[in-house]
Amino acid sequence: MIHPKIIDLIVYFITELKTSKGISDEILIPLAESGYSQNDINIALEWVFTHATDKNTKGNNTFSSKRFLSKNEERVISPEAFGLLMRLHELGILTHADVNLILDTIMLSEAPQKVELDDLKLIVSAFLMKGRRLHSNFTELMIIN
Image (cartoon, rainbow, N blue to C red; front, side, top):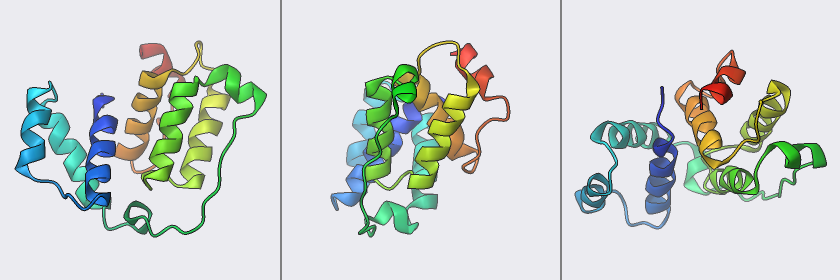
């Protein structure tokens, strides 16, 4: 199973790249000391370097819009989880279509509980690592967590 901490690492690395600091050993050492496993760091770095050439993660997107949740979506998705989804979009990690696909899948899944921040990290990790496809039995992800 993909660890939700990978999303935190991807966000951190993309932010570092966008602020022109780059990714060096100087920023990797404190991550390991903070409890991130070398495997999680490597998975996140592999994803970033594989996708960093995509126009979406370069910040070239001049079109900007905001996505608001419907009343039904607000009942199912926590504000913190939605905030992360919007942050991932702002960083170019997710496209508009990705955000809508994730939200639609959550709504269609009839998840047994409200989708919280850690739940969304798990969902987005699976989405990104599976090549922008969600697990065929998405509800299992929600029950396991």
